[in-house]
Image (cartoon, rainbow, N blue to C red; front, side):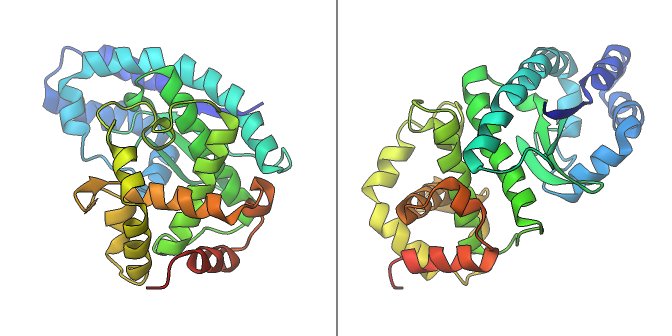
Length: 277
């Protein structure tokens, strides 16, 4: 059974009591009555990619967010329970130790984040991003793969290595396809978010160009944000995930073998798979 820490009841209690207050007071109460009651959780969340930048805007629409979170929490709990055993089996890992799942409301900073909560590898699921069960099942499979992968590694992987990021994300995409099969191809990259129907055809058309450019930028310290963050490559978001998928699939190795590879071996495999720059 998955280990799940659910902060949604605390959020609902805060939102119910703060509803009639001004946005300024709501934000203060958020910090006191929601984050303050889960200080260890939010310290860990903010130590990663999570941040509070969107909190001020979120409290202005508190009623809508409260309804979304209340609807999302039971669905996400069920999906985690369903998906986690399949991810563990696909990766060929022992059931213990397992990730600590945490349901949070994270101010729209990230949709999910793998980090550390105490001594545990933790997966923070941000309930405010919930938009439908189908896409969330794929997202949970993807992010849960990251959490199990980090447990298998036994170390915190590098955050600034472009080759490692391609391997790390490519393994998660490959696992999500195996665990949640037969979904539209773009769903493994966009998790059901609309408006990206032409993204995958464009990537397919520019495949060799993308691989060559990625190879040329491996040592560029600014490249990680362009390929895997909020930046753009040829006017397109997140094309690093397409490159990662192509490279890891091209290695032709089973998932248990991939997650057992040390970081240096994994990055060497990605570099060898790229065209010469």
